[in-house]
Length: 252
Image (tube, rainbow, N blue to C red; front, side, top):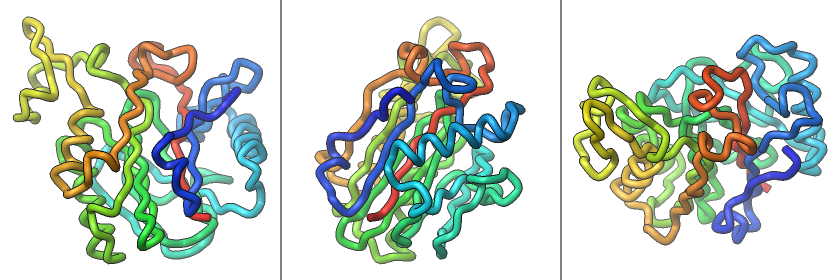
């Protein structure tokens, strides 16, 4: 968290702000922001307060954190209240994508290899966050979130801007046939013997394109959490780490 990673594409839009946290050795658990992994809550909350301070939004923002369950469940956030930020008990239940049009609300995703996707519709002033592991990707959670934005807020896919944040890459995400069989598009994996190298960022990019987004409105970070383990938490590389970094987006 020595600095934030940011999307050059989203940075062009004044209507939203966003950030992806990174590791920092000076902070507890290298700056982990997860309350659900067994680390002392007060230490994690101190990290969260430090994130808010560095973002320069402090008490002005309402951070919303979900109980991520690798589902395709999508929740509309309808009010300006923090949830799951100060205590895990009031996190948005059983949810892997959130959408809102509420200014001052910051939607968040916690990951350590899974794909975080941030969406912004500058015309309707709507944002969304998506947590896409292989199960969520299999269920097309990214495409479904775009559709939900259209159904609920009248968003048009060609207006939506997307950022696919740091996640494990094709170079490091080895899966078995039991996982690979759920992906019929051969472009998203390479077979190596009985193992498969799965490209979840590409699979989610394809879902965005299939949902109607313009190619030029999609930015893929390209950073692999496993390769860049000094910067990001990686469950695979660190063999079960408890740390999580956070991708977030809010409306100004």
